[in-house]
Figure 1 (cartoon, rainbow, N blue to C red):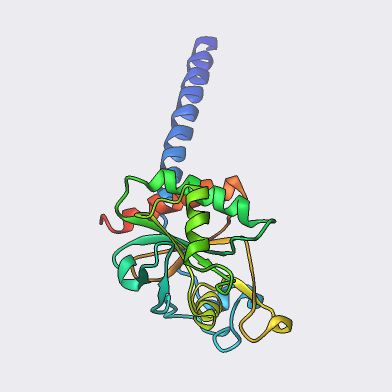
Figure 2 (cartoon, rainbow, N blue to C red):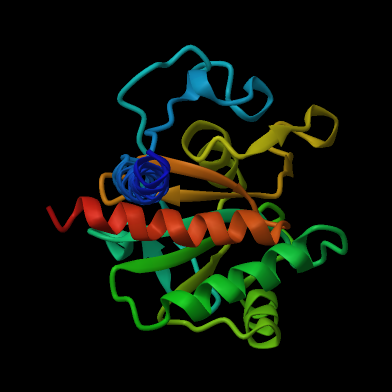
Length: 224
């Protein structure tokens, strides 16, 4: 009788361990393969969204654009066609969160350097200061690779509308003029259909790790 209970105890332990391993594998598989959310304006903090689209619940995409990068080259949506990309908003004279964001974006650049499917796009919120020469100096200082990462300037109204009507990433700032804005620490992950698939705090290492993992998840969508 004691031998029976001893054998049963061993069986129960082995069965329990095997069951836990199987459950962990299944959970991990389901978690990794779960599609990323497609973000709509109605899902985002209203402070970051233009009032004309705050109630929009579907069909949101990044609008077409035409801006100038650190090399004086015109950059449009065609440069990001069939690409996954990470976007953010910054300005070169910022002394608070921008240096951290830029450093973390540089870390993302290192991870995607050999991946032709992924690019980066940083928009200046002070285009009147950040001309091509200023962006070029900043790019050289921060280790920007021209083939992977565009720092763009241009028409302030267009940047403002991209920020609040497309990327849903900045707060309006009426006291400084109709198109002045307060940028946030957000990085946005954009898919090949020009949809927002994730928001990340560009000042936090944990969020950068999550972003890199989400890029891998998103890439799998295009391998099916």
